[in-house]
Image 1: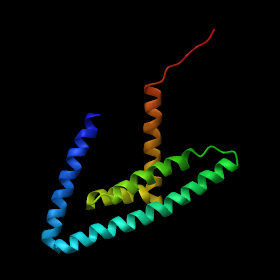
Image 2: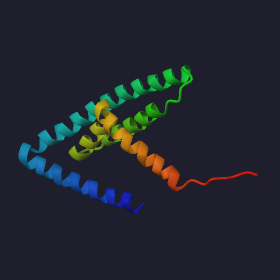
Image 3: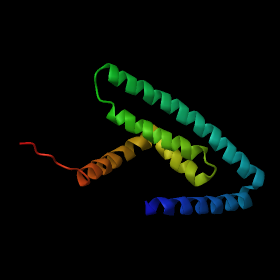
Length: 129
C-alpha cells in the first residue's frame, strides 16, 4: 500500500511539471487543447475497445469457455480509460498503453504471472482426511 501512496504523490508532480513545460513550449491554450483532445479521443478509444471486449466475453461464455484473458483485457481498458480521462500527458501515455490491443498483449503475460505469483504466495492448502 505504501507504493500506492507514493504513486499518488509522484504522478501528479510529474504531470504538473510536464504540463508547465508544455505550456512554455507550445503555449497555454495549445496545452489546454491537447488535454481536452486526448481526453475525448481516450474516451472514444476506451468505449470502442470496451464494447469489443464485452462482445468477446459474451461470445466465450456462450461457447462455454472461460473468458479469463478477455476479462483481463476489460480490466486493462477500464484502467486505461480512467487514465486517459485524467488531464496530463504522462497519464495519457499510460492510458494508451492499457487501451491499445497490441500493447495490452505485451503486458498481459507479465500481469498473469504476477497474479499467479500472488495466488501462490497467499494460498492455503486444505487437506481433508
